[in-house]
Structure formats: structure tokens, C-alpha cells
Amino acid sequence: EVVMTQSPATLSVSPGERATLSCRASQSVSSNLAWYQQKPGQSPRLLIDGASTRASGIPTRFSGSGSGTEFTLTISSLQSEDSAVYYCQQYYNWPPLTFGGGTKVEIK
Amino acid sequence: EVQLVESGGGLVQPGGSLRLSCVASGFTFSSYWMHWVRQPPGKGLVWVSRIHSDGSRTSYADSVKGRFTISRDNAKNTLYLQMNSLRGEDTAVYYCARESPVAVNFDSWGQGVLVTVSS
Image 1: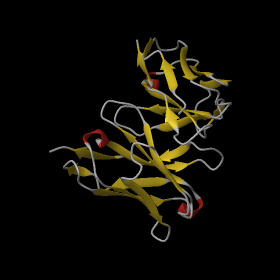
Image 2: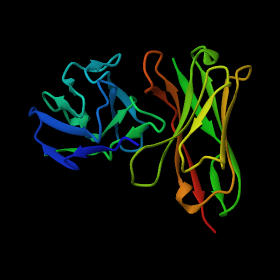
Image 3: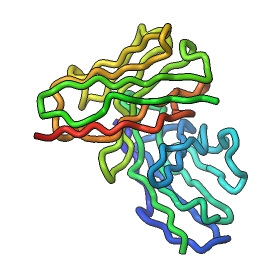
Image 4: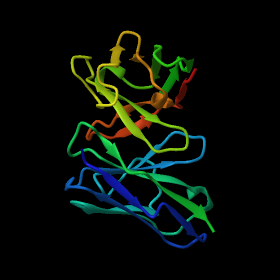
């Protein structure tokens, strides 16, 4: 099973600042990585597919990068509505499909 | 607009059974692979099961294999999850999710339904 590890667990960022979230895979997943955003009381929403492709309707301040075992989700200028938990998910070596434990982004 | 609406959750005793349903609308249900993903209270997302667009192929997480069965009725635009021999660790919000056409990730999610396994 591919283990996905996200860091940090919690990130506190001021509005307008950059937020950088990390996701590490226990083995290479190539670029088969997705990012999701989950706001309190809501279902997850797909943000990024293929490690770096924004899903439909996702603002350009969200960007993804990386390949192999190291990935990054960057929110270039944090907005108040970006307060959420962010999850990465690999779909290279499965079953099972696996998610990281999540990074909670708080607005400072 | 894509909509996925789950139902069938509730409180069940350990060892009991429950069947979840997910009614899809706004897209051609029969053309998409579908999944169940769960989220224990206060915890992260865990993939449970996947089913081919025509129902011919399925896969499961080891933790539910032999106890849970995923199925679908394309005539009714409905996805199911039959859960037997339920355990406390199955307590979670269960989401149905549509698989993206180009990758094995999830481009649409239902609102989720809570399953609580407790005596």
C-alpha cells in the first residue's frame, strides 16, 4: 500500500500570504496525484488532478507541483474562504487508493 | 448539474447490516465508474470500494473485503453499498463519489451519510 504523508498538520497563514502544503508518497506515484479541499461540514472538492492541473472552476491562486514522491500544493494569496482541510490522494498503485492525513489551513 | 444524494445511514448494532444508496442525476450515470469513500468522525478520508460503469468489475479495501458489497442499478441511476458484519471501526460518514473520466480520482461527491455502529 502506498502511504501518503502530509505536512504540516496545521498551517496558520495571514490573508494575502502564500500557503505551501506538502505531500510525500512512500513510493513513486509518478504524477498520479490529486488534491482536495474540504471545508467544515462539507464534502471534499477536487482541486488538482495529475499533480498540477486545476480542476474545472478552481481559482488560479491554487497550484500544484511535483512528481515521484514529493508534491506541493500552493495557495498563492490566501483568502478567508480557503480555510479548510486539504488532502492529497494517489492513484498510481492501487487498490487501495490512498489519501494523506490532511493539512488544516487556518487564517491567522 | 451533477448531483449525488446518499441515504440509508443510521445507528446499527455491531454485527448488524445496513444498505446505503446513492441516487445520481445530472450526468449519464451508466458511463461512469463510481466509488464509496468514508470518513471516520474527526479523521481523514478512506477509500472503500469501486465499481465499473456496467457493474462487471469491483474492488475493495482490505478492511471491508468479504463484508461489504458494492453494486449499481443503471436503470435507476443508483449506487449501493451493502454493509454486513458491521464493526465499531466502520463508524463514519460515507460518501459516494464519481470517478473522473481521465483519472482514478473523484470529481464529484455526495453530501455524505452517517453510519454509526454501536450497542
